[in-house]
Amino acid sequence: MIESSSIEIFSTTLEETFSSQGTNFSEIERESPSKKMISEQYQPIYSEDRHTLVNFSQLAEKKLKDLLSYLKQFEDDFVSYDENYETFLEKGLLSIFFSLKGNYVINKHSGTQKIWFVSPLSGNDTFFYDPKVSNWINNRGQYLDQMLENELAFIVGKH
Image (cartoon, rainbow, N blue to C red; front, side):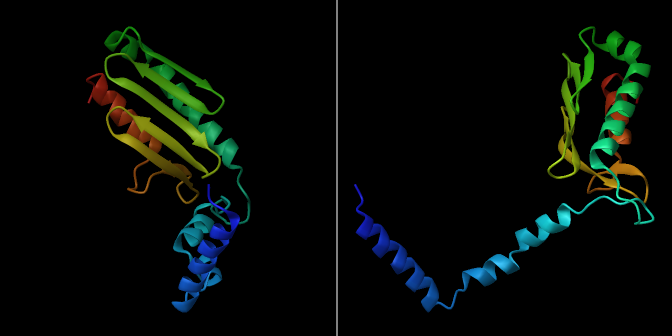
């Protein structure tokens, strides 16, 4: 068992060590690159004219519903490829099941204001809303709907 006096000695020694090296912890916290990145990453989403605050949840839900509508259009193709094909949208989570290739999971993540994309072909990715093009785009410049469309066409042999 560690006695409280040992803890006090240990913590005092650490503080003295860092102080003697000229380390000021309050400066480190203020200048932290991760803190800057976090504040930049969670900026509110504005319309292209920068005057109207856009609701992330509404934008993300609309995109997920649009993707579900797209999937419904090609459901016969998907079922003919894999009779166990199934898709559903529930509480901000779009799931696409292919027993032969794997599963897609596309969901809104309010904390980062991004749509997360998990694919059996391309792996994990995130998409942010770009008001300049009114679409969801990843860091490589790919649109979410185009990426999904291309992968599904490849899976069912229509590419």
